[in-house]
Length: 179
Image 1 (cartoon, one colour):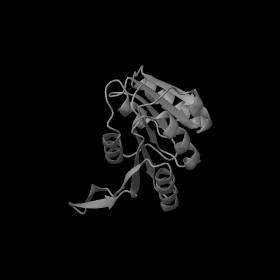
Image 2 (cartoon, helix red, strand yellow):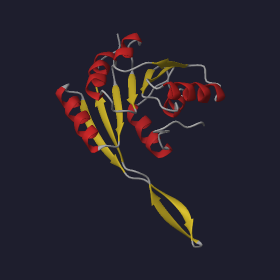
Image 3 (tube, one colour):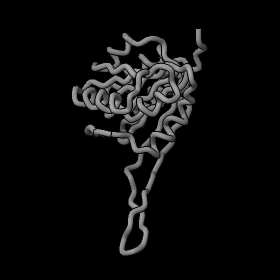
Image 4 (cartoon, one colour):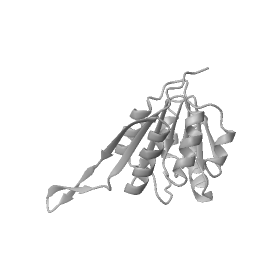
């Protein structure tokens, strides 16, 4: 998978984030700040329709290349800035936010569009605070999970562990019923 600055989401973090979304077979899902498209590609195995959104031309190009290489048909790639571009999306069952730029406005728009879980990944503590406060103000905050993962590597004939930067997974739930 071709990479883009800031991604892809590490497989261990992706597994936890996707499990928190509770994706189901007929769900419509959005990946906001899709980066390399790794979350979109993983989600496409569960959701019926995936929207991969990013404002960066390089991210859109890399996502398109990765989606094409994986021969996935249920992902639509959108080049645009959230929250504005979110107006173009249909009602969503769940959403993942991989970047925290404009997070308060993005969450406000998603709170109106999503009728289930919203999962945000953040690495900066300020972004975590802003995200939790915004979700609490919207009365959608469910939980935050701090994840620290270390991966093994060989060292002097033994096995040592090297930590991966910690990630905060913030979960919101709009509890909106499907029409």
